[in-house]
Length: 222
Image (cartoon, rainbow, N blue to C red):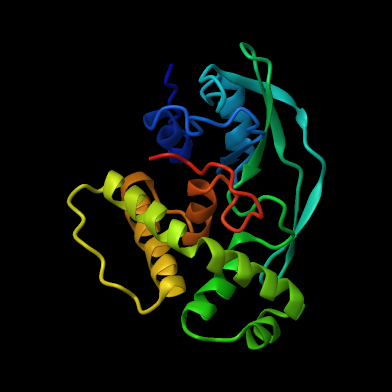
């Protein structure tokens, strides 16, 4: 598989370094990129973004639909770029790392809810703090609890892959707390290795936006 590097976005370097990102995912249509439209466009035009399906170059190919994301204090309006592979002809949505696939709230907002749950806070109180419907927050938490063991294992593998000298991480006091701690550990290591990025943006990167997806699609393979 070919490797392409970018001097503009460390995330592109990460994807190149770990060869292909989604090793077994023929249905892949989403690629997580940095929240920098100008940088993403520059990388696409330069041909340094690899196709998740076959590893060849992605080129600019129109845009995905415009969408609004509810942030902590503002609404973000995004229109993600699409890239098309010149070899296998597949197209991919280049989703900014502030987002999670099929969610209308930013990764940071969802992350705040998960962090609060790890501390023992109930979904109704979290919903009040975030000004979100209780049913929405309950849905996030239920899905995260269902995959928390997988999350903890996945992010600790990434943390040790990026920093082989990393020692063992002590249990945080529960499956949800362990998963949130693993995300934080991997995010800290990734930021030191590749440049700073918000922790929940790394969570989106390492799960291809599917941290709390209702499917078990493959995540970013270490």
